[in-house]
Image 1 (cartoon, rainbow, N blue to C red):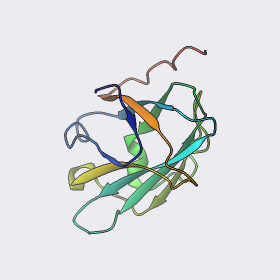
Image 2: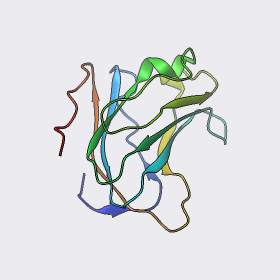
Image 3: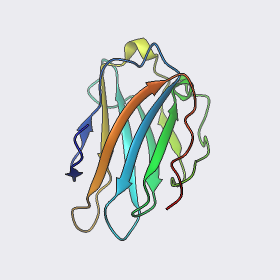
Image 4: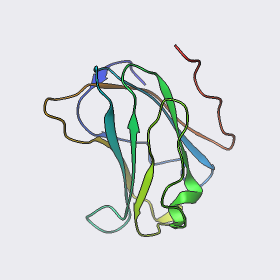
Amino acid sequence: MPEQLLTTPVTLPATGWVDHRYLVLTMEVAEEHSMAFNLLLYAAEEAPRMTIRFGLLPRFPARVVIDLNWLDGHVLFPGHRVGTLKVVCHGSRILREELTRAVLAPLPCAEPARFRLTDVLFTDEVPEPLPLP
């Protein structure tokens, strides 16, 4: 992915959801404060069927690991990894085959907040966290 600062939602690739166990987003908040994000997951409905909300620490590159087994709706608070803050899964179960769209959306801040999304990867292995700064 191009290394640019983003302030608006990003539509994620439509392929890879069925064939792999994990979605890995390599991200960094480019502000002096933490930021919260929603991963909005859509099926046939107009509104997202499931939302995975997570936070990131400021100026701390991190790998956000989403276990795609969470989409079956059995986990509310899946835990977090180095560089991330609390993760919460909201909504109803969604089969991976039903996914029509996935959007990574920053939650509103007092001012437009900037972030980097440098990699989107589907994998079957949990990646190591990025090195500490």
